[in-house]
Image (tube, rainbow, N blue to C red; front, side, top):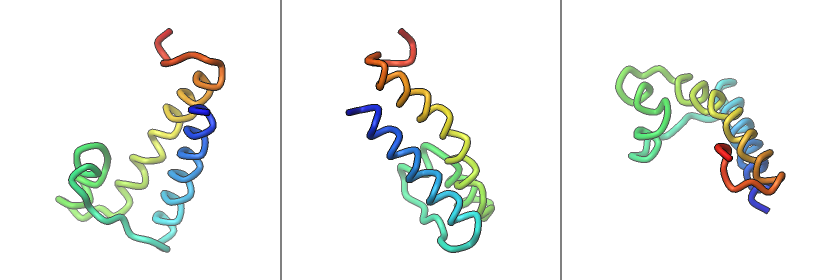
Length: 78
């Protein structure tokens, strides 16, 4: 179940990042977003594509963890 949810999350991240890069939506800064990704760059220096690129950079990690969860492993370290 966790693996399927991680793959769904990866799909959501990919879709929202691509639509943002294409100009259909604009990322909105939040404290959590600023603490975790490229929203800090967007909020400080007004680089609109930074959040989308940061989200796309995290996709391989989400996919890896989803694959490991589908195999029954609880984390990618074991």
